[in-house]
Every structure is written in structure tokens, then in C-alpha cells.
Image 1: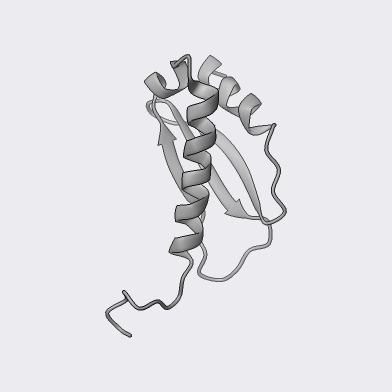
Image 2: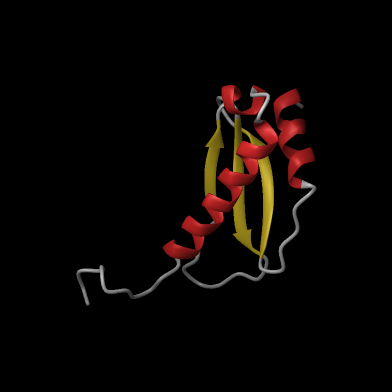
Length: 90
């Protein structure tokens, strides 16, 4: 297992959430971070984002990772809307 993947997994171990679970997997370049609901809901997919080697190797990785994780959680929840005023069908 790659050093970068282990680094991301160690960082993820510090986070726990009642609604979602986090995982990290080797990607072609870097590491893929995945976020999914602990209890599946029809139509809700797993959210995935690639962490590039330069992000993981950064001396500021811990802080940048937290910001990116929180941004991903925000995006993931927003993507779950089934209706909002910006959707053309409404």
C-alpha cells in the first residue's frame, strides 16, 4: 500500500460522522477519497474526489485536507437535492 494512501487513511481516522462514512482508495494518480451515506437512500450515490500527490505531500496537508473534506461534504449534501429553484424542471 502506498505511503500517500496510508497518510490519507490515518487522517480520515480522526473523523467520524453519524450520517456519512469516509474511505480512501488508491487511484491512478494519488488517492481517491469517497464519502457515502451510512444508510443507503435510493438515488444517492457515493461522492468521490481525487487527492493529487502534491496535495498529500504538502506540509499543510492536515489543514488543507480538513477544508477539502468539509467542502466535499457540503457539495455532497447539495447534490442530494431532489428539487430546488435552480432546477429547470421546476
